[in-house]
Length: 223
Image: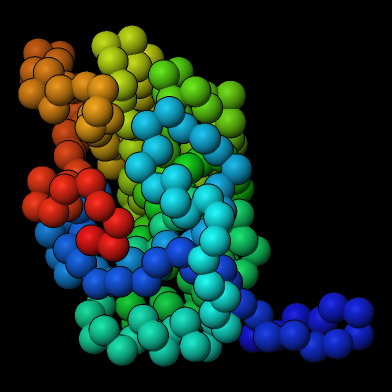
């Protein structure tokens, strides 16, 4: 895994903010022991972001060394997240290498960058950013056509206007026919109980979710 720059061969690498083992707190594999690979950097600045520390800093890893670190934890579930992991080009070959080693891999992505080149074995957990996120304009709606039943689409909701907006997107794009749809409350802005009540009231065919890890360990990094 190398690349050429100025006629010199350099090893392919990724800048990593965190690498740790925990329980998956969200999406389809919630509750399962999972290795988290958090890449540094993100082009978005969502109002509710809880990983601002991953915007900068981090440590460079060669792809082979990073893969060895992941395998050393001895679990099958791996979550590649950020920041925005697709903002680093070498994320794509890294995802392929994880899948080549028989790991069950999910990619958490903002939906602002092209997902079409992500290996089909990877489960993409993609956001559509709501109006209250402050980043609605960054949504890459072209990504929707690439979603399959192997993937999930997530809305993080801050208020009732976000909820109503998300309902419209589910209907407009036929999202339930493409993939599983997740509705999640922004922890600091919307009551989980309120969101649950709206979903039940409207008999909405979406999966309600909360950030399990925050209920177990609080709002801290590395869990």
